[in-house]
Image 1 (tube, rainbow, N blue to C red):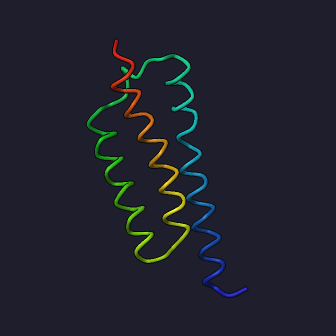
Image 2 (image 1 turned 90 degrees about the horizontal axis):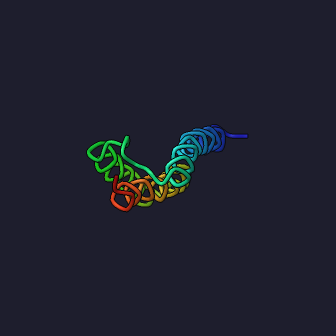
Amino acid sequence: MDNGVIFEMVGMAAGTLTTISFLPQVIKTYKSRSAKDLSLGMFLLFTLGVFLWTVYGVVINKPAVYVANGVTLVLAASLLYAKFRFKP
């Protein structure tokens, strides 16, 4: 196995773990129907950053970058939606 394949596998593993880490927060937010403790500023900046990482991954044609960040973008955007939807 060449180094490129190994590095791509490491990237996919890292992307999978960091993406999955968002699931407990998304589940908790939607179960409780409360997003009052989520920082709007942080999630706005984070979502923009993840969007840019996704674009970057597409431009350099690296699935480990654009797949993981694309899924993370959906999860982060769902938390942003919840922040506006579930008003206290």
